[in-house]
Each structure stands twice: as C-alpha cells, then as structure tokens.
Image (tube, helix red, strand yellow):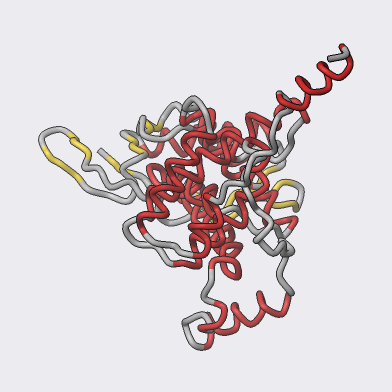
Length: 303
C-alpha cells in the first residue's frame, strides 16, 4: 500500500468521533421528578469540579464585574451555588423553580461541558415590562396578594431584591439608632452606614456573619436594582443565607446566668450612651456637616 494511502487509512481510523449530546438538563426540565433533580445535582457536582470554599463562592456570586480570564471560576461558582440551591429545595419544589434554574444555568453548563444539549431551551429577556411591576405593587397594596398569573419566580424574583434591600437598610439603621442622616442636604447612603457599623468598638458582633459578605450582598443588590436585572435564584439563596445571621438570627444568647432570644442577638452593647457617642463621632469624621435624627429605640441586645 502506498504510504499516502496507509496514512489516510490510519488517520481516518483514529479520527475523533463526534460524541452524542447528553441530556441531563433536558431530562429534568421536561420531567422534574425528585429522582431527576437529584441526578441533576450530581451532574452539577461533577462538572463544577473541586469544591470551592463557601467564602469564595459567595464573593464570586455577588461580584458584578469580571475579566475574561476569570470566566471559568465564575462558571464553576454558578454551578456549585446552583447545586446547593437545588439541594436546599429538593424536598419541596415546584416545576417552575426547576425550569427557571435550568434555563438560567444553561450557558454556564455549556462552558464547562460542551457536550450537554441546551437547544431545547427558548431564550428569553432578562427584563419585565414596567406594567407588570406596577400591577404587582398595586395588587400587593389593594388585595395584599400577587395576581395568580404573576406568581412565578421569573416575575417576582426582582421583588425579593427590593425586600432584601429594605431589610438590610432597616437593620443597619436600627442598629445605629438612626432614623435619618444627611450631609449638606444629601442623604447618607447605606454603603457609608455599613462602613461605620462594621468598625464600631462599642458593639459586640456575632461571629456567625461576616461584614465583608454583607458588603458583597449590598453591592450585588444595588447592581440588580439599578439595572432592573432579574437575579439568579441560586444567588438569591446565597444572599438570604448570608444576611440571615445578621438580620434574623435564631440562636439563643447567654448573658450572665440567663438565656435570651432576640431578633437582634447578632449585636450586643453594654453601654448604649457610649455607643451613641461613638456613632456620632465616626459619622462626623466622615461627614463634618452631618445632621442626624435619632430613633427612639435601637435594634440591639442590651446587657
């Protein structure tokens, strides 16, 4: 056999064969049983690779800017966070929840497993008409409920962002005991109040939450609110998990010989007058012309 003919035969024989597409997403999307959801979770664990630390996963989940070289890390964090979210809801989920996760995660899956078929998913915009937001607000006020045809996480997940922002700002201002603060007529923003809060020496903070993670969540919330972006459900899950030990702690606290339960057990003060002086001093150091209207009460545990 001529050399060329032999080479052609060998090269054809060893030519990589195109693999059949896998259908992990499609199977669960079309048939959202518990068994299939568990299989999907296991699939995510495989393509997500070596487990990334919780702190790193949260930091990357709440980031709003990326470079190209960080894409793989971002994608793995999305996959691992989605896996954790599915694990948290697998005993009580709706088909709508599973479909939303699969539709949102598809592009990150294909970046890590190009053999996975995602062509069955119809792409959709990430924004909703303003009328839907208005109708939802109107129904919440007038009827204390959301219209049945809007009760889907695609339609209302953005509302969760507003609620989280409200709860965080309420907690920070409650901790500081501030109703309103302005500097030269301009309101002092939540970012500044968080920076003041985390460095207070008169407050003992629970070790169950981390201030840097609170700041990550706040930045992520602002990004989605101002750009009207619908957040991924697995990152909402991380946001709630991150804020809960600060905003809504459940663990009892031992003070002296008594055990206390409180919404505010994440923050403890022994001398509240000293705390107020410290807050005022720290704020004036940053905002010399600040005007503060104090609340009658403060959201904090006392000795």
